[in-house]
Length: 97
Image (cartoon, rainbow, N blue to C red):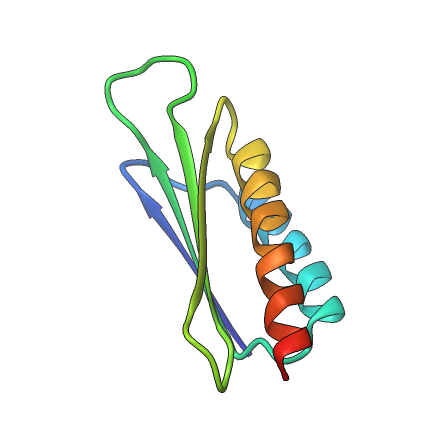
């Protein structure tokens, strides 16, 4: 499994990278069919509230890529929301097989 984290329009901190990896690892433990994960963290300009966006794309064999994108005040909150949106997609995918 390959986890790729992209920071767009900002420099990512070690703390944020560790947070994203921890959340993704929890997701992978529950759904072991995931092959590749791409996380795009984007700072939306101009500087306003709700300007942090997290998009997560999961590559699952035998189905189309799963994707969720959420915007929030912090990257941590956006990642949590995106993962919460992916979980029902993964459940549907799991029950189809």
